[in-house]
Picture 1 (cartoon, rainbow, N blue to C red):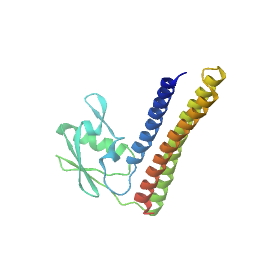
Picture 2 (tube, one colour; picture 1 turned 90 degrees about the vertical axis):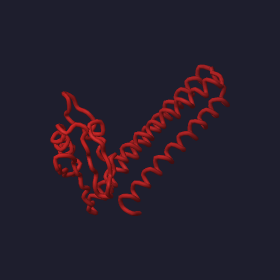
Picture 3 (cartoon, rainbow, N blue to C red; picture 1 turned 60 degrees about the vertical axis):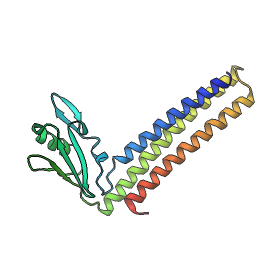
Picture 4 (cartoon, rainbow, N blue to C red; picture 1 turned 135 degrees about the horizontal axis):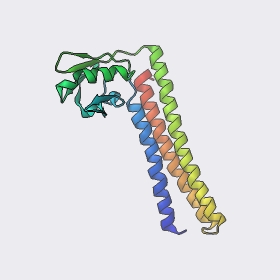
Length: 189
């Protein structure tokens, strides 16, 4: 194993850890904080043209007010299907239609619901940190295997382990920061 192999290992580790961090970012973006965000509707899929399609592919979504999302269907015949899909998504939203657009008011969150959402934020963040640690474990195992097979020196293994740990620390710090920001949005702390 030479320096290019180590660089490839670092690149792979970074890519896999970044994917875990990005997954946490998307999960947290979909959590409702009392403010309207079109990302809240990412899990909604509409029965359209014989298949399930993401809501953002059958309607233009906008946020004209902090507590309102408006869905303007590209095809007016999908109006009722979009309304049903939003209700079925169990997001606690109650859409209303005027025949042309769908208004989705965002209810304010109760203290109990905010705490529940905060627990979910912590769960998603912990899952992300565990995914990052699993990538680190895999990379460290590879390095130890290379050392055992006498493909790298002990110094190279130590440098490799330190490099992997540095990337791990960066990604976990990024996840911690995402968690902290979401908690501030939810709880104001």
